[in-house]
Length: 160
Image 1 (cartoon, rainbow, N blue to C red):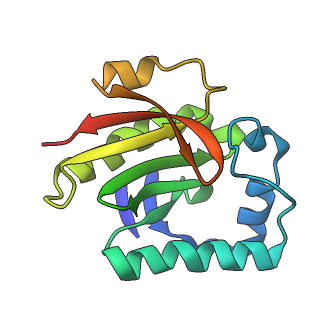
Image 2 (cartoon, rainbow, N blue to C red):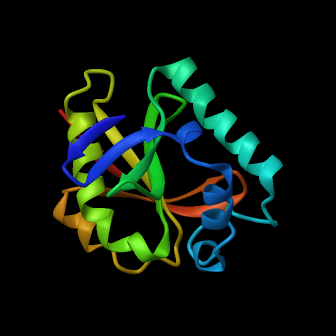
């Protein structure tokens, strides 16, 4: 576990009970802005999800963390290598949405300190209308792209 502040810690997904991830990813509010979140999740889905995210750590030396706020699971996110790009994702439990800016700042600071990551990409569904945070970060729009059969708005943030 990596403490980011007295009340915020980055951990690995296997440290979180599968039932907590299942409850999180089964919340219908998430599907509103996650076009790749289709179908019902069960414990086998959680196991496969965690294994896939851990495989990224093994393959790339970086991946997705579990975010803990005051010791409680708040969500997951981080970096996943897509070709030559590092894509940033952040999926919080709805009651933890207010932590998004803090967590994003901490993870993006890690990217700025990692020589492997000259820039970060963000894929957001077209349903996301509030993009002010990306503008404040100076992320630039790359337009719409298709990823895994879904349309996304793509942004790029230079980290160097």
